[in-house]
Length: 279
Image (cartoon, rainbow, N blue to C red; front, side):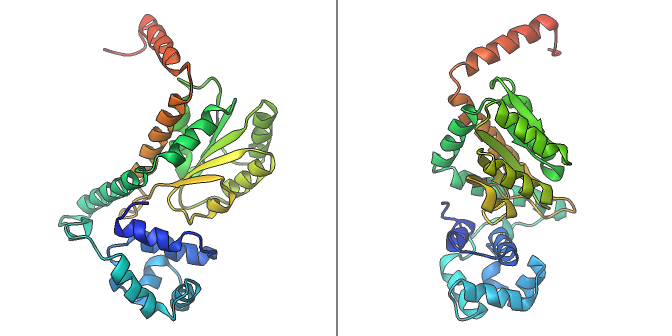
């Protein structure tokens, strides 16, 4: 766990049985770790999109007498870091970029312990076929992973469309021998994704999930969730950290595939013979 303010906040929430509303508050606090020790309960409620009493109940659920006690605790364990993104100047576009840099730094801190990624790599490499799920906002993440994974994995199946056929495709993968499923899940979370993960686990698949937070709605239906924060400074969320984590998982998976390098060399030779790329 990173020793950044966001990392210490996340450690405070992990292991707690939180309601969906409380998970939303927790996610907002992690995202705004540098500011939250100085926010009133009303300000935090507005940022999280919940009611002020919900913030109070959240503090009590964590074992504090109320929100003021929680805020005092946060000032001790998660003070803002000097020189952090909150101290930077610039317009809204620059601030969005700086926020993504902070998200990547947080991801780098989480990766100081490589064990979860290495475990994910083993699960993904061992699944033949490997279904990769991502709907709506997460479809581009799933498609990018599947494109590159297909260069080293013998059978990758992209699931980027919802509807009644989704469970059929999960069933087909299980019949073909799949043992794991990789899911990219980003806000706003489609109900279909949550239902698909629940179905996949019931079918016997180990679910590895990349989501914006350990408190995301898909967490309860994941065997291994690795968080990578999204940026919220623009009208549409940005997902540099989830994309980077996807590439890290590709690397970990390739490390577990003994013929990965041979497959890449074969592809390069065929691409050259076909004149596939412009030099």
